[in-house]
Image 1 (cartoon, rainbow, N blue to C red):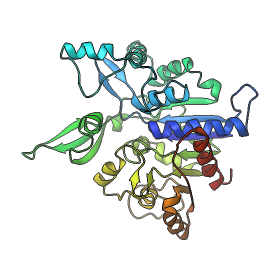
Image 2: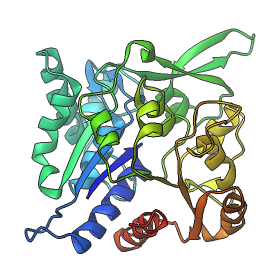
Image 3: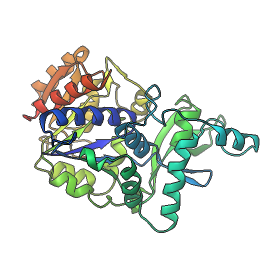
Length: 340
């Protein structure tokens, strides 16, 4: 079985970890892994330069989570982390006090930056970093959405009405999305192309999964890379999504604020319709739909019922990823929704 996952950071990483647990049980390879092939295409729109190193938050969260090194309480960063370097940089009045890099995490960024400066692509650097965490041994191939830099910026207005762009991480981490956003701008998107292997992973998959990641700045950014949405709409594989909205609010993060910026209500039904159904070829607004099926939480069962009336394959189940077994069950429900 070939499975392709379009992932943001924490939510996508935790879902993929549960998916792998399910596959190890269903399709074991006899060595503690799975015979299934899982390709994770990661959002790189959150990437940025900081302290002279290239930081790739979603790629690293996926790598640490699947590699067993993530800080579980945070959902990102390294377990047993320290902050000596960031503290000393602050003493020099260097960097952003609201965005600190842990010492162990910094080693990842330093290695990546060295390889990039030597001419290696982001895909190559990602593959090399992933070797340490034996992702291939788990049946996982981790790919950036593009090798070209794409950075999400937020258009905001100052008190005097002057508009400016700030990096998404500044808006998200420093301002906690409290600074009104007028729109999102993916800098570098026009010249970007899918990273090697991304389109093949979509066109040859047996199933494509859109896990509970931010539909605007995570999955939305992946879909905006030229060629990716077209490949997703054309693949013969069923495409199933898991709602990141439960009971009218995101489970974590500030997806509600992102959705409000683009005029989409923060409900399970509205997010499904924002993604769109592939069978609706005559969709009158927006881009072609990308989903065949949509899994929502039990509190949003009414959304599944309304979508089903309109021809969607939709179902409701408990979708809170409280631990790995619970997440494996959610993954099983998502696959069952498309007959797998």
